[in-house]
Image 1 (cartoon, rainbow, N blue to C red):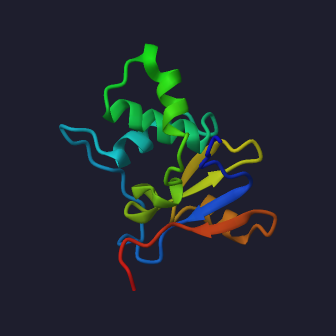
Image 2 (spheres, rainbow, N blue to C red):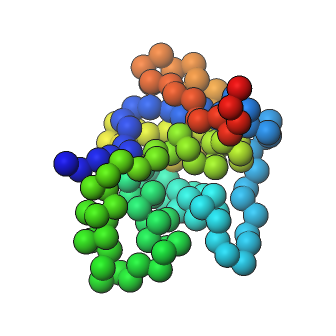
Length: 136
């Protein structure tokens, strides 16, 4: 059975305990962070990749999986459930909402932006909150 992290026509709101009221770009570190990898991939190509694409690509980059082995590694990776973008540091820590369109492709929007508010007010789009960082 293949597991997936993809949503369609869904907006992931920032977590209730997100520490910022304005989105922050993840800072560049010597060792690339998950937040930085996800941010760059989504910002460079909005609505080009699905959640599965982004989560696997970041896993592959962090684990130095060569291009020639990625297809098999992806099958193995999704043979068990993986955390979805509700767990992404972009919406938990950095203040970005994540929109999944009708095809499941994603783009990110700063919490303070008009687009973010538009998604919140759109009754045709399902809304889910990003996971909290701390237990209540």
